[in-house]
Image 1 (spheres, rainbow, N blue to C red):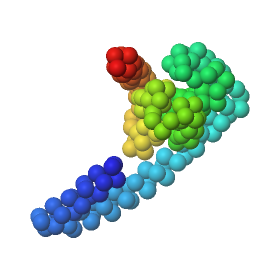
Image 2 (cartoon, one colour; image 1 turned 135 degrees about the vertical axis):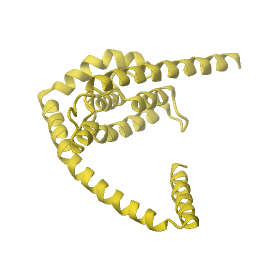
Image 3 (cartoon, rainbow, N blue to C red; image 1 turned 90 degrees about the horizontal axis):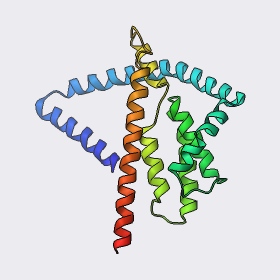
Length: 197
């Protein structure tokens, strides 16, 4: 569905430009955007490699395992349907830890594995309570260090590229809390409808 929306936007923009006689401006914008996107990608690469390396060092030093252990009681309360020793819990904790450090690319494979394990636990093709909760948390994504945003700010010569860390922490705490509250409200509504039936 998202692909169809992007195709519609691109085609409608080109058709509009053709009717207004500004196709040359569209071509110019496309080539400028391509050039800029390649430059941003190359500059982000160094920062992401640095943070991924730092993350690997933290993992080898046991910092990530310590963080996962620290958050395990909280995650157990958020996901009561998951058995304590199940691998899904480990993948969820790893995903959340990677997201906290702003490493969305590193978090994605763990998130996919977590979803696969949650699907195995539910034994159904329909989304389970834990799958919906995990998706809500993963989308809101509590972030302590927004590495990608810092890299973009550095690329554009920001005076204080790390000045957004405090605001990011506050915003993502609020978004994660809101995601959990909304998830619980809808969960209880579904349960009440199920009991009423």
